[in-house]
Image 1 (cartoon, rainbow, N blue to C red):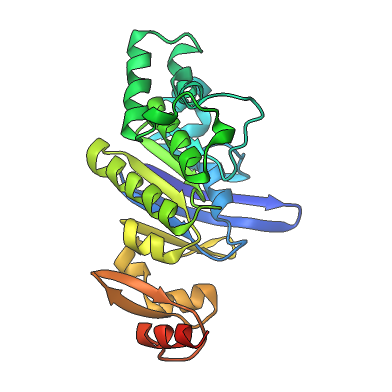
Image 2: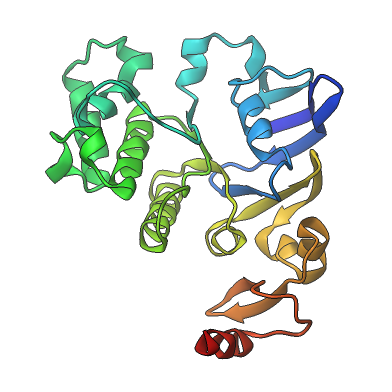
Length: 269
């Protein structure tokens, strides 16, 4: 479990994260949602030590992450930042090899190559493993970065807006892969995500932030509610249950709009 205790971050006189405390359950997907500027990415960056905090602590299995050596922490948590642009011209396999760096410092042994092979196979990237990263589609590239985190073999995986610049098909593929990692490998995944319907369909728990503070935290069914989301996003949002999932309809601001209304609106376009 990860316990976040009162973390705070300010830039000058502006407090972007204010006294945020939360518990991140093991073996679950926890999504951070909220409007732009809510502090989601800042919270993620502080929890993973990419960004120093002004106040507060983060405990990983009871130990303060801010006092742990870098290499030891890299064997416990991995993170995919919002933008992963490498200037190096490297192949998929070379990228996935980087996941073993905390263990090998670049000198991979037979065991490490086996782990890399398994990560590439898990992400179904065998046919692309010798291609350069910059020659891949957005979805393929994101799968390659996730393969790198699998090779890093950490229990906790943090992803900052991994669906950015992906179309619907590839976004669904990435979220399905994350659920597989939880189900098959017992990973604990923490994700910053803008699309509340992806959060609703694929998360176990949701933390909603607004103005740098936690507005509400709980299971997805506790958070994906009309009154809660309208308060957070300051717009009309209706909830429809579709195939067992709570789906948010926010295409316009007509009170009482339904999915059927949405279809009718689309037919007029």
